[in-house]
Length: 68
Image 1 (cartoon, rainbow, N blue to C red):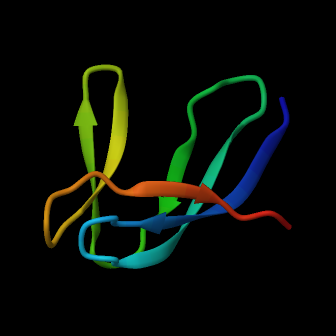
Image 2 (image 1 turned 180 degrees about the vertical axis):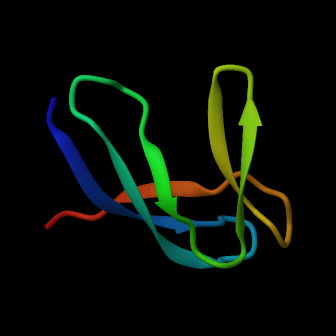
C-alpha cells in the first residue's frame, strides 16, 4: 500500500472565497480523505461521495490541483 498526501486549492466561484485543502489517500483506491479543510468551507456528504461547499453561500467549491 502506498499512502500519499497532497494539497489542492479550493475556490468558491460565486463569492471568490479561496483556501488550501490537505488531502491524503491510498494510491490503489480512488477515494481521498480530506485531512484539513480551509476556514469557510464545509463537507457535504452525498450517497457514495463527499463534496466541498462554501459555508457562506452554500455553493459547491471548485478543486484545483497544485503542481509541485
